[in-house]
Length: 260
Image (cartoon, rainbow, N blue to C red):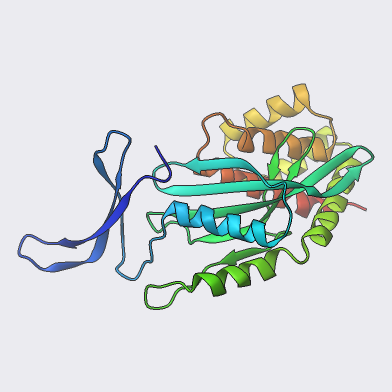
C-alpha cells in the first residue's frame, strides 16, 4: 500500500444519531477504494506520513550533511517507518569494521504509536540497522489543541538528536567492539536466551540461530548481527520485526554490561 496515500478522519455516529467518542480513519488504497484502518479519539492528532518524511528530511538538511540516503520506507496500512543514513558520521567497531549514523521516524494512523524521530546505527558491512532505546536519542512531537508548532518542534528534535550524534555513535561502537571480542559458548547462548532474549518466540529464535550458526562470527556481535539481519532485512517486514530489532539491540547492550 502506498504510504503517502490520501487519508481522512470522520466522526462516528450511532444509529440514533448520537455522536461517538471515536473518529474513523480511512485510507484510499491503490485501487482508489476507501478502507477503514482504525478508530481514534477526537483528541488524537493524525499526521500524514508525507509530513513525517518531510520533517525527518528537514532535520537532516539542518545538519549541513549532504550525503543522506533513504534506507527504509515501511508501511503496513497503519504504522509507518522512514529511515535515512549518512556516511559522513561513522565510528569504528574494530579496524576496518564501522557503523554509520542514521535518522529514523515513526508514525501511526491508528493511534498505536506516537509521532517520533530519533537516531540509529547501521553496520556498513551488511547494512543491518540497529535501533536502541538505551543509546540513541528519540524525540516525540507534542501538540496542543490539535495542532503542532512544526518549526518549534522540529528545532527541538534537531537539538535533542544531532549535536551529540558523533559522540553517541562512538560510544555505541565501543559497546559493539566489546561484544565483538566476546566469544560465545553454548553456556553463553543459554544464558543470553534465558536472561536477555527471552521474549523472542520459537520461530524468531530459530531464524536467528540458523543465521548465527551458518553465516556469522561466533561472538556476541555476530549474534547481534544475526538478529538484525533477520529483523531489519526481512523481505516482507512487519512492525514486530522493528520492535524485535530494538529488543535484540538493547538486550545485547545489557549483556555487554555484564562483561569485563
